[in-house]
Image (cartoon, rainbow, N blue to C red; front, side, top):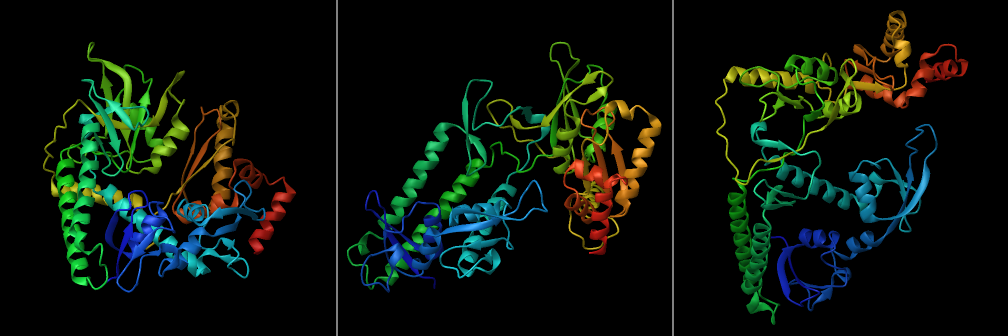
Length: 476
């Protein structure tokens, strides 16, 4: 059986627990416990500071350590890495989770005899694993939420931690349950948590003065605490079941400024440049909603478009915002965010979907998630976006446009198979989107030429320096 620990609350002096060692470590990481606070377990003769007993002594030393790391130059990948720091262990773990450092990043601290890759530092391994576990648990919690049907959603331009419903009732966002609740509900949940802590304290009250030799009482208290916690989780889950839940991912974009006589097909053709638009599983129609003016019953110029993949949203905002859906008719494009319509949540009965339609949708999603022709290749982005490849004036020449497409296709084909090249002729930044047959080819392109000006030099055969660099890279 895992070793259980009691600890003293630094503010109230109240005894809390019992909890296993991983929970104590998590409380240390979150700052709820401090290394100097007292803990006790059966093998100890007296209450001791967390930092003075194992398995927490070494853990606290590493947590308090400062580090330097070799940071890569984000603007120029060919430049040498520079020493950055000092940073705390907590900051280093955050950098790891955010992807700014990885297992190959060199780090140094006073406890090391030299610079070493993060993956070869045993003392950091536990912290990185715990951070990954926390992310997994958070993702699992988010996956339990379901997306609200678009018919019951109201567009909200910017996200908010609080909102006011149409009837004037105020809601706040509960980060734990990922739902909007009233302040009264939130306070009730907090009181329930406090009540749970009191139950734990009462269950072990008899052994406060004589902690030694009370293993049975400790186990019984742990079981009582766990049962109460499970009961509270079940109660909260049931309470939140009929509440609007915020979706984990967003594949919708919001469009403003559409012509009042626009058609769904026009919107589809314009936005399909940035990705596959999702189809309704029942009707097969594209999931594009054009909002109407309640007074005139005509369109009001707003709409939403649903893509199959989340990455298409970022691409659409980048390329289609301020673009012209018709000549001299620019539109605004932004990621769509939704909130509940009205005060009460109305649970929508899900329509019965034909099994064949489900299979068709699954196959379509699978086709987008795996690259064609390359078995077992992990999913990845296959589109490379390059800016400043031309000016709108230059692209008016059809011969120039055709020649530019051929040059880009020829050069990119040296890296991998090119599926499609799209020139956004009216975009002021001279944008070109190149779709490769595999994510690996797209990744190689961005690694070799991250910025558009470097890519353009790569295409220009007249640049001798660029040619020589290309020959050296080919030899390597």
